[in-house]
Length: 337
Image 1: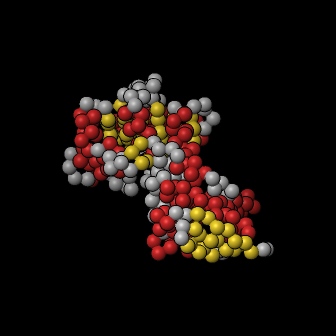
Image 2: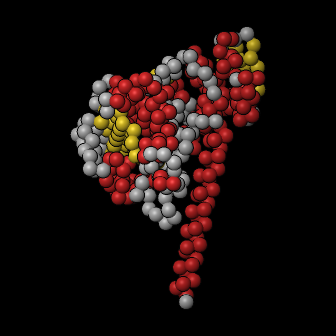
Image 3: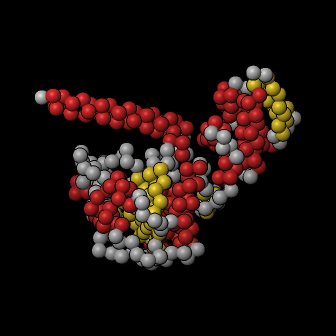
């Protein structure tokens, strides 16, 4: 294959952001595509085999545009740009960045960072009920919270209800110190954290006192009809089928619902069926319900977390194949007897 040379303009003020500290991102691109990058006076020369040079040029153009829009380029951006190039979807990186859901109290924009996250946000916007399935770090809860707060501020809904099962990780509430509220609060802390970051503690407390924002365990939903509300059920993998049915039948007119969960992180007793798994199978063909599955590609935490999630995904796939094979062999042996 012939060697090629291309030159791309990267303004000097964006070079450090695009190439990373100590040229870490540039070195990552050089290793991934076996090219050489030579930056000089606002221009960067790319040397290597023709297809690889073209791909690196596309990635650098996308990262430069992100930088020019005021984004701080992260390792996750670079890794995701590389994965998109291999799928011939490199143009998507800038497309994703165009959509801003809202801003945090500090003015930081909240927006989807991967194609999977964009599909998830679009589903929340367009469907009445959305299931967000995927591993930790994919932004399932945080993006749903951002959408809920935006809908509330625009008066598309009159209140926000955030709920999750109160018993996790094998702990029973009765063994924890304090009254009911202090027992429940640690389980709901991730929801409070997101609310404080996006809305601010003062605004949250004011709306909470008026009953316009409610953070409560799932058991509190029984016997209620939830009209004109944005409802988020978090950690839904820890519900029972009965709890999930109860929750889904509480939904009233003018409401929007997001149900998030990770089927690989169940805290239910061994052998118990998850309400999330059952519900996905029951409602998957119903109109106005969307089921979005996020993967390790959509993890937006530290790159190491992405690698850990991917390793667990591969491990669990192997485990399932092994279990199926073992089950088949035991059935075969049983028949012979």
